Amino acid sequence: MNKLNIEKNQIIETTIIPNTKTQQIEELAKNKYKIKITEKPIKNKANKEIINIFKKRGCLVEIIKGQKSSKKKIRIIDSK
Image 1 (tube, one colour):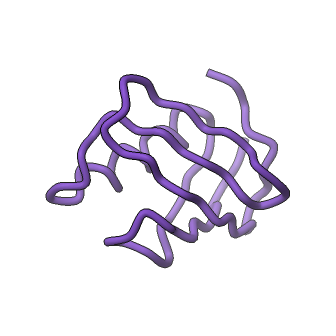
Image 2: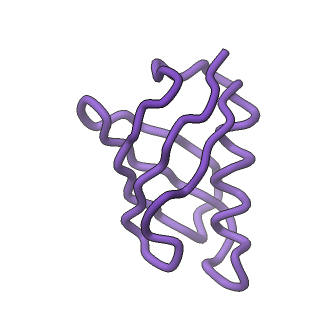
Image 3: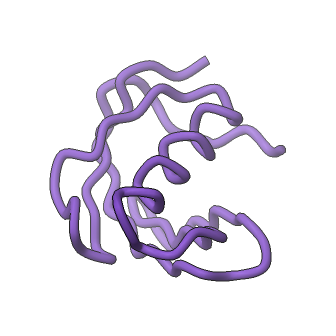
């Protein structure tokens, strides 16, 4: 798992691609990321996977906008 170049209290914009074979976070531009996840967007499973992906990379996050959308704004609560 690679460490992300993000800071505490930073807000990032993401595009989520669900139902892929692997998990991946790709930086597209400053504060813009594409996140591939393996879960389908059903019963909040995709959002939980997104939070866990960031957790594995040393970041505590909160989805602040786009709970039911593929476009999300995520706030970094803490970053190691």
